[in-house]
Image 1 (cartoon, rainbow, N blue to C red):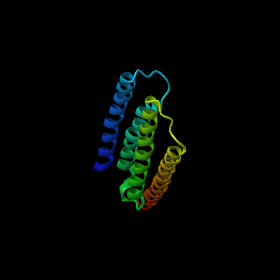
Image 2: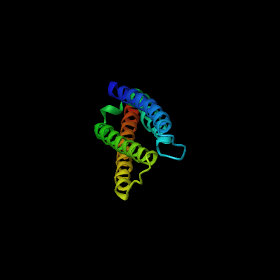
Image 3: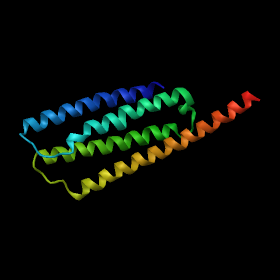
Image 4: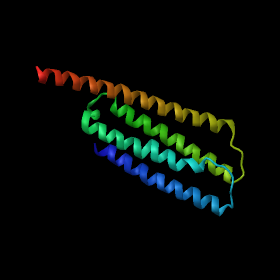
Length: 143
């Protein structure tokens, strides 16, 4: 349970820092156009902090960490989110600096999204198994 809380806490800090980075980096470079830096803040807070707070609540109710896929979900999802957000920061920073990001950056970013999706699949399969196990336990206790 603690590592879920720590993940949410770290994402909260990173989300706030990314908002600060966006504001100060664009101001420092006198940039007023569109950049992916403007959405990094919300991506980290929603997909990181808020998501892991929901996972923490579900852990309390269903003991998700007891499931076999929890560790795979946790590390795969975090790796995908780090890759996705990291490349959003690189792409947004390049835009602010006046550089055109190449196709390779888009491809690597796509891998980040695929990795997040794989992590979410692990999460929902694990959640489904935990729900099923709890239903079986409740039927036995009711009998």
